[in-house]
Length: 161
Image (tube, rainbow, N blue to C red; front, side):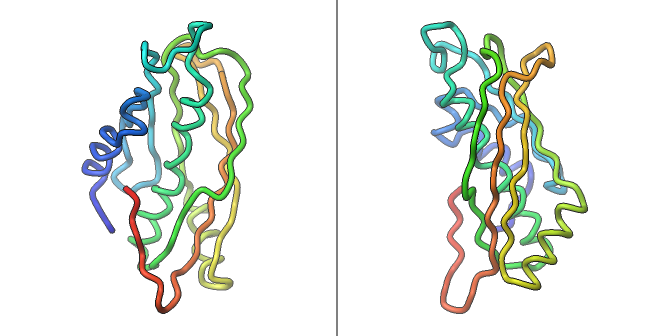
């Protein structure tokens, strides 16, 4: 389903798994080439050390590459299924303040995906992310592996957001 960047931003802001952990989508780029997210430290996601739960940080990074690629490929005429195939996280320092990250998808990344979808019907690639505190210090690094494929006859697209 193709939707506007603003509609998607508000839908994700109130999506319960993100909303209750205080994960706030600040913006989606109008062309869906970037997304900026804030993980607000609050009583709802603070652990006994006073830092943000690692699970909250991990959850925050889960959907955004898949969502961006889904919207980008649909706008290019592809009928695709996109999901996060795997992820790994490395915690570098406690998140004792709000945390932030931005995902940027380049024209080269889009071209790689388009070529793979046209040639082999699927695209799998891992992308890094850095989660930073308000001072710009990296608190965690995440690798998200995106899986995308053309839908074949008989399979329908089901949107999860």
